[in-house]
Image 1 (cartoon, one colour):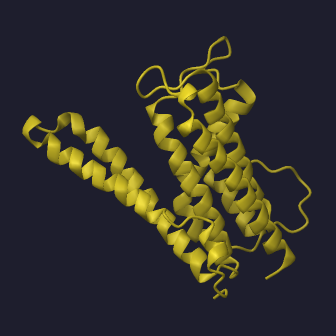
Image 2: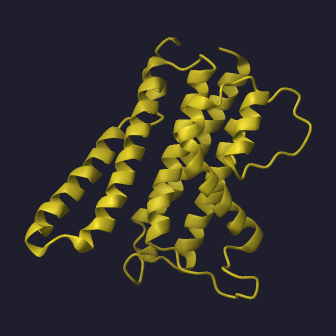
Length: 228
């Protein structure tokens, strides 16, 4: 494994640790509990926006890591942008393409936050509340960035067996997260006599997501399998 791979791994794990620390702070601090259900405002919303910016920066570090002789400033707002960078790095884009939708959504939200302070219009003076859609998207973005990193290691043939397992778990959790959203959207149409059963299925889905993510990035340090 090269010094570049070691450095990228150290930077990625450090940055994700910092991001996870912010996520834990937001979720555990009683003073940051939302006033209204499914909405976050004020400091909590701004901390969540900061996580988005930090997470996108972490993704960019991974994406740029293998570009040879990088000279020009690169921007990533569409799947084609990611494709071009991977091809410049002599990496096959195909295994990454299922991750493009959440990663491009992350990029667009980061742009809105950084360039517009997340204000909905140029004449607006108050940011919209961080809502239920944002609460669903952020975990998806966290999983997508991690999955992209581990796919990068798989594609460059430096991934350990533990890292390959982590990648598969993140992909499985992302699929379950989509299923969770579909279950929530369908719930208002469920007949009253079937709602308890529907809620039980939603709980099972959430537990499945948690179970698949039990082994996170730290597993790659605890089980230093040889690269395949």
